[in-house]
Image (cartoon, rainbow, N blue to C red; front, side, top):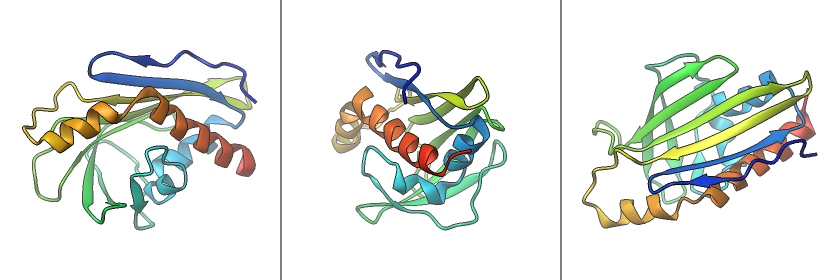
Length: 160
């Protein structure tokens, strides 16, 4: 059920999508704050797995994710507000982050619905690697929306 369906937005290096999910904010946030759940709703189909027990609880924390190509990413949490916002910057293990950020923002819409906004910001991507820039350009608002839509299916089927 979509109560609110915002228009997706894309500027040159910031991509954003948003929609309402028929599930409580706390429940939706738990699915986002637990990296082990990410592969089940990843609209980019880029995430293979994450070890359980990495639930994010604050800025400065890191969690590891294995991509479908077998590469590992270490994600440093740079924004966090329990139940409302989480953002991280990925990097190869023990490397400096190349300069892109993933953000999730949640806003309660009544007691049983949540407005979810997903943002991919690659403004600081200063990488001469052509493949990384191609992947950043290929991350469209539609792909972000696919993640939100899959998250909605999971949240609404297990919802609170």
